[in-house]
Length: 274
Image (cartoon, rainbow, N blue to C red; front, side, top):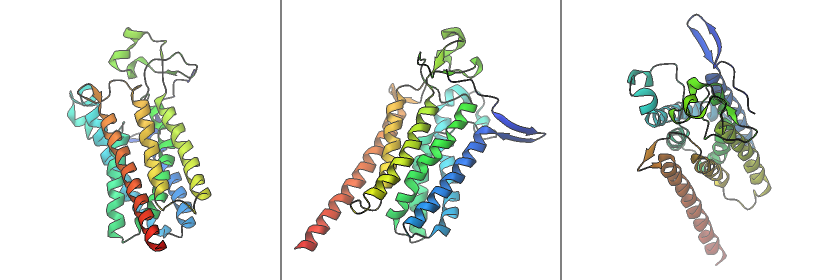
Protein backbone atom coordinates (compact mmCIF):
# COMPACT_ATOMS: atom_id res chain seq x y z
CA UNK A 1 0.00 0.00 0.00
CA UNK A 2 1.23 3.47 -0.88
CA UNK A 3 1.37 5.48 2.38
CA UNK A 4 -0.56 8.59 3.30
CA UNK A 5 1.81 11.55 2.87
CA UNK A 6 3.01 13.81 5.68
CA UNK A 7 1.68 17.34 6.06
CA UNK A 8 1.71 19.41 2.87
CA UNK A 9 3.54 22.23 4.68
CA UNK A 10 7.29 21.75 4.95
CA UNK A 11 8.17 24.89 6.94
CA UNK A 12 5.93 27.45 8.65
CA UNK A 13 7.55 30.36 10.50
CA UNK A 14 5.05 33.13 11.12
CA UNK A 15 3.86 34.38 7.72
CA UNK A 16 6.52 32.33 5.93
CA UNK A 17 5.02 29.10 4.62
CA UNK A 18 6.95 26.71 2.38
CA UNK A 19 4.89 23.88 0.96
CA UNK A 20 6.15 20.65 -0.50
CA UNK A 21 4.19 21.39 -3.68
CA UNK A 22 6.05 24.63 -4.35
CA UNK A 23 9.40 23.18 -3.33
CA UNK A 24 9.07 20.22 -5.69
CA UNK A 25 7.98 22.52 -8.52
CA UNK A 26 11.15 24.58 -7.92
CA UNK A 27 13.31 21.44 -7.79
CA UNK A 28 11.71 20.25 -11.01
CA UNK A 29 12.57 23.55 -12.69
CA UNK A 30 16.17 23.36 -11.48
CA UNK A 31 16.66 19.82 -12.74
CA UNK A 32 14.94 20.68 -16.03
CA UNK A 33 17.30 23.65 -16.38
CA UNK A 34 20.38 21.47 -15.90
CA UNK A 35 18.93 18.96 -18.37
CA UNK A 36 18.39 21.70 -20.95
CA UNK A 37 21.92 23.05 -20.50
CA UNK A 38 23.35 19.60 -21.16
CA UNK A 39 21.21 19.08 -24.25
CA UNK A 40 21.96 22.59 -25.56
CA UNK A 41 25.69 21.97 -25.28
CA UNK A 42 25.27 18.69 -27.09
CA UNK A 43 23.59 20.52 -29.96
CA UNK A 44 25.96 23.54 -29.92
CA UNK A 45 23.13 25.92 -28.98
CA UNK A 46 23.53 29.08 -26.90
CA UNK A 47 22.96 27.84 -23.35
CA UNK A 48 22.98 31.43 -22.02
CA UNK A 49 19.45 31.85 -23.39
CA UNK A 50 18.04 29.01 -21.31
CA UNK A 51 17.63 30.73 -17.95
CA UNK A 52 15.70 33.73 -19.30
CA UNK A 53 13.65 31.48 -21.56
CA UNK A 54 12.85 29.04 -18.78
CA UNK A 55 11.63 31.84 -16.51
CA UNK A 56 9.28 33.18 -19.20
CA UNK A 57 8.01 29.74 -20.17
CA UNK A 58 7.50 28.73 -16.52
CA UNK A 59 5.42 31.83 -15.77
CA UNK A 60 3.31 31.18 -18.87
CA UNK A 61 2.91 27.51 -17.95
CA UNK A 62 1.94 28.39 -14.37
CA UNK A 63 -0.72 30.83 -15.60
CA UNK A 64 -2.14 28.34 -18.10
CA UNK A 65 -1.96 25.46 -15.66
CA UNK A 66 -3.68 27.43 -12.94
CA UNK A 67 -6.44 28.60 -15.28
CA UNK A 68 -7.09 25.05 -16.49
CA UNK A 69 -7.22 23.75 -12.92
CA UNK A 70 -9.60 26.50 -11.75
CA UNK A 71 -12.00 25.79 -14.61
CA UNK A 72 -11.69 22.05 -14.00
CA UNK A 73 -12.35 22.30 -10.25
CA UNK A 74 -14.64 25.35 -10.25
CA UNK A 75 -17.79 23.64 -8.98
CA UNK A 76 -15.92 21.57 -6.39
CA UNK A 77 -13.48 24.11 -4.99
CA UNK A 78 -14.05 27.68 -6.10
CA UNK A 79 -17.71 28.41 -6.91
CA UNK A 80 -18.58 29.09 -3.26
CA UNK A 81 -15.52 31.35 -2.78
CA UNK A 82 -14.24 32.60 -6.16
CA UNK A 83 -11.53 34.80 -4.65
CA UNK A 84 -9.72 31.65 -3.48
CA UNK A 85 -8.93 30.88 -7.12
CA UNK A 86 -6.54 33.84 -7.36
CA UNK A 87 -5.10 34.28 -3.86
CA UNK A 88 -2.40 32.12 -2.24
CA UNK A 89 -1.82 29.39 -1.34
CA UNK A 90 -2.02 27.91 -4.81
CA UNK A 91 -2.68 24.19 -4.76
CA UNK A 92 -3.47 22.67 -8.09
CA UNK A 93 -2.32 23.07 -11.68
CA UNK A 94 -3.77 21.58 -14.84
CA UNK A 95 -0.95 20.13 -16.94
CA UNK A 96 -2.79 20.48 -20.30
CA UNK A 97 -3.21 24.21 -19.76
CA UNK A 98 0.42 24.62 -18.77
CA UNK A 99 1.59 22.61 -21.77
CA UNK A 100 -0.38 24.79 -24.19
CA UNK A 101 0.62 28.20 -22.75
CA UNK A 102 4.21 27.07 -22.20
CA UNK A 103 4.45 25.97 -25.83
CA UNK A 104 3.03 29.29 -27.02
CA UNK A 105 5.61 31.13 -24.90
CA UNK A 106 8.42 28.98 -26.37
CA UNK A 107 7.32 29.76 -29.93
CA UNK A 108 7.12 33.50 -29.19
CA UNK A 109 10.53 33.83 -27.56
CA UNK A 110 12.27 31.76 -30.24
CA UNK A 111 10.84 34.06 -32.90
CA UNK A 112 11.79 37.21 -30.95
CA UNK A 113 15.30 35.90 -30.33
CA UNK A 114 15.68 34.79 -33.97
CA UNK A 115 16.58 31.24 -33.00
CA UNK A 116 16.37 28.20 -35.24
CA UNK A 117 13.43 26.48 -33.51
CA UNK A 118 13.79 22.75 -33.99
CA UNK A 119 16.98 22.22 -32.05
CA UNK A 120 15.40 24.05 -29.11
CA UNK A 121 12.29 21.92 -29.44
CA UNK A 122 14.52 18.89 -28.91
CA UNK A 123 16.01 20.57 -25.84
CA UNK A 124 12.71 21.69 -24.31
CA UNK A 125 10.50 18.66 -25.05
CA UNK A 126 12.21 16.07 -22.84
CA UNK A 127 12.77 18.76 -20.18
CA UNK A 128 8.98 18.97 -19.83
CA UNK A 129 8.97 15.29 -18.94
CA UNK A 130 11.79 15.81 -16.43
CA UNK A 131 9.78 18.56 -14.79
CA UNK A 132 6.69 16.37 -14.76
CA UNK A 133 8.52 13.45 -13.17
CA UNK A 134 9.59 15.57 -10.18
CA UNK A 135 6.78 18.09 -9.72
CA UNK A 136 4.04 15.44 -9.71
CA UNK A 137 5.21 14.35 -6.24
CA UNK A 138 3.84 17.65 -4.97
CA UNK A 139 0.40 16.21 -5.71
CA UNK A 140 1.12 13.37 -3.29
CA UNK A 141 1.80 15.80 -0.44
CA UNK A 142 -1.42 17.67 -1.29
CA UNK A 143 -3.35 14.37 -1.45
CA UNK A 144 -4.62 15.11 -4.94
CA UNK A 145 -4.30 13.59 -8.39
CA UNK A 146 -5.56 10.19 -7.29
CA UNK A 147 -7.86 8.03 -9.35
CA UNK A 148 -10.62 5.48 -8.98
CA UNK A 149 -10.64 2.97 -6.09
CA UNK A 150 -8.34 0.00 -6.54
CA UNK A 151 -7.36 -3.24 -4.81
CA UNK A 152 -3.87 -3.17 -6.30
CA UNK A 153 -1.06 -3.45 -3.75
CA UNK A 154 0.18 0.07 -4.50
CA UNK A 155 -3.22 1.64 -3.83
CA UNK A 156 -2.97 5.14 -2.34
CA UNK A 157 -4.46 6.05 1.05
CA UNK A 158 -6.32 9.39 1.04
CA UNK A 159 -7.64 11.15 4.16
CA UNK A 160 -11.38 11.68 4.26
CA UNK A 161 -10.96 15.47 4.15
CA UNK A 162 -9.22 15.30 0.77
CA UNK A 163 -11.57 12.94 -1.03
CA UNK A 164 -13.92 13.72 -3.88
CA UNK A 165 -17.61 13.52 -3.03
CA UNK A 166 -18.13 10.38 -5.09
CA UNK A 167 -15.52 8.48 -3.07
CA UNK A 168 -16.06 10.03 0.35
CA UNK A 169 -15.46 7.92 3.43
CA UNK A 170 -19.22 7.77 3.93
CA UNK A 171 -19.70 6.46 0.40
CA UNK A 172 -16.88 3.91 0.08
CA UNK A 173 -15.36 3.57 3.55
CA UNK A 174 -12.20 5.06 5.02
CA UNK A 175 -10.09 1.97 4.20
CA UNK A 176 -10.55 2.34 0.44
CA UNK A 177 -7.39 2.86 -1.60
CA UNK A 178 -7.01 4.69 -4.90
CA UNK A 179 -4.91 4.66 -8.07
CA UNK A 180 -1.89 6.97 -7.51
CA UNK A 181 -2.22 8.87 -10.77
CA UNK A 182 0.53 11.26 -9.73
CA UNK A 183 2.89 8.28 -9.52
CA UNK A 184 1.85 6.94 -12.93
CA UNK A 185 2.48 10.33 -14.55
CA UNK A 186 5.78 10.73 -12.70
CA UNK A 187 7.06 7.34 -13.82
CA UNK A 188 5.93 7.97 -17.39
CA UNK A 189 7.73 11.33 -17.40
CA UNK A 190 10.91 9.74 -16.05
CA UNK A 191 10.77 6.97 -18.66
CA UNK A 192 10.26 9.46 -21.49
CA UNK A 193 13.04 11.74 -20.25
CA UNK A 194 15.46 8.81 -20.29
CA UNK A 195 14.33 7.02 -23.44
CA UNK A 196 13.77 9.87 -25.90
CA UNK A 197 17.17 11.64 -25.60
CA UNK A 198 18.94 8.26 -25.71
CA UNK A 199 16.96 7.40 -28.82
CA UNK A 200 17.87 10.75 -30.30
CA UNK A 201 21.57 10.08 -29.75
CA UNK A 202 21.33 6.60 -31.23
CA UNK A 203 19.44 7.76 -34.32
CA UNK A 204 20.87 11.27 -34.67
CA UNK A 205 22.04 10.58 -38.23
CA UNK A 206 18.52 9.66 -39.29
CA UNK A 207 16.19 11.93 -37.26
CA UNK A 208 15.21 15.42 -38.28
CA UNK A 209 15.78 18.16 -35.70
CA UNK A 210 12.68 18.60 -33.55
CA UNK A 211 11.49 15.01 -33.72
CA UNK A 212 12.62 14.16 -30.18
CA UNK A 213 10.89 17.24 -28.80
CA UNK A 214 7.71 16.47 -30.71
CA UNK A 215 7.99 12.90 -29.46
CA UNK A 216 8.07 14.19 -25.88
CA UNK A 217 4.85 16.14 -26.39
CA UNK A 218 3.23 13.09 -27.96
CA UNK A 219 4.52 10.95 -25.07
CA UNK A 220 2.82 13.12 -22.48
CA UNK A 221 -0.35 13.42 -24.56
CA UNK A 222 -0.71 9.65 -24.80
CA UNK A 223 0.01 9.29 -21.07
CA UNK A 224 -2.68 11.79 -20.15
CA UNK A 225 -5.23 10.28 -22.51
CA UNK A 226 -4.51 6.77 -21.20
CA UNK A 227 -4.96 7.81 -17.55
CA UNK A 228 -7.89 10.18 -17.94
CA UNK A 229 -10.44 7.40 -17.54
CA UNK A 230 -9.20 6.81 -13.99
CA UNK A 231 -9.67 10.42 -12.88
CA UNK A 232 -12.50 11.41 -10.58
CA UNK A 233 -14.92 14.31 -11.11
CA UNK A 234 -12.90 15.77 -13.96
CA UNK A 235 -13.97 18.67 -16.17
CA UNK A 236 -16.38 17.32 -18.78
CA UNK A 237 -18.16 18.53 -21.87
CA UNK A 238 -21.19 16.54 -22.96
CA UNK A 239 -20.29 13.80 -20.49
CA UNK A 240 -16.79 13.37 -21.97
CA UNK A 241 -13.65 14.46 -20.11
CA UNK A 242 -12.37 17.73 -21.57
CA UNK A 243 -8.80 16.43 -21.39
CA UNK A 244 -9.65 13.91 -24.11
CA UNK A 245 -10.46 16.78 -26.46
CA UNK A 246 -7.54 18.99 -25.39
CA UNK A 247 -4.84 16.33 -25.34
CA UNK A 248 -6.29 14.63 -28.41
CA UNK A 249 -5.95 17.95 -30.27
CA UNK A 250 -2.38 18.39 -28.97
CA UNK A 251 -1.48 14.86 -30.07
CA UNK A 252 -3.06 15.35 -33.50
CA UNK A 253 -1.26 18.68 -33.99
CA UNK A 254 2.05 17.15 -32.92
CA UNK A 255 1.72 14.24 -35.33
CA UNK A 256 0.61 16.60 -38.11
CA UNK A 257 3.69 18.81 -37.65
CA UNK A 258 5.97 15.76 -37.61
CA UNK A 259 4.34 14.43 -40.78
CA UNK A 260 4.67 17.74 -42.61
CA UNK A 261 8.35 17.97 -41.66
CA UNK A 262 9.05 14.43 -42.81
CA UNK A 263 7.28 14.99 -46.14
CA UNK A 264 9.11 18.27 -46.71
CA UNK A 265 12.45 16.62 -45.97
CA UNK A 266 11.65 13.71 -48.31
CA UNK A 267 10.65 16.08 -51.10
CA UNK A 268 13.81 18.16 -50.65
CA UNK A 269 15.95 15.01 -50.72
CA UNK A 270 14.36 13.84 -53.99
CA UNK A 271 14.98 17.24 -55.57
CA UNK A 272 18.65 17.12 -54.62
CA UNK A 273 18.97 13.66 -56.17
CA UNK A 274 17.64 14.76 -59.55
